[in-house]
Length: 141
Image 1 (cartoon, rainbow, N blue to C red):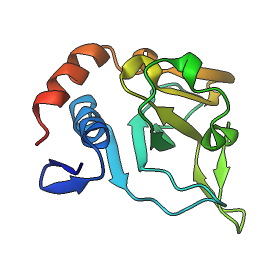
Image 2 (cartoon, one colour; image 1 turned 60 degrees about the vertical axis):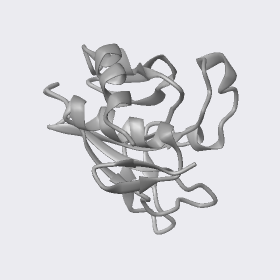
Image 3 (cartoon, rainbow, N blue to C red; image 1 turned 180 degrees about the horizontal axis):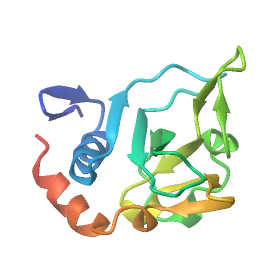
């Protein structure tokens, strides 16, 4: 069933809630980014990073799926784009692909960060993730 946030129609309430969450977290977001190979994500998001080796921000291609735990993600095709996402012409699109599930604990991606990188959790990037998630639910119609 379609849901609305800020006058935009989303395919699901979960997608609309993530859009509201991104605003509360002060992440820039766009819907319906271009397809990469046979994969179409739901959002392109950019969020700040103050690490001296990273530049000012990171960018993710995010797919939203109604999975309640990280263990249920298993082998999601979109997560195959760890550490960078390039288009068919080899042009950079994002730092990584990500899967955002039914709550902040299910958001996962793998990217370079600082002099290393690895699997990232939303709580490492958004201090008030749980509070923002609850508030985001009240902002959709």
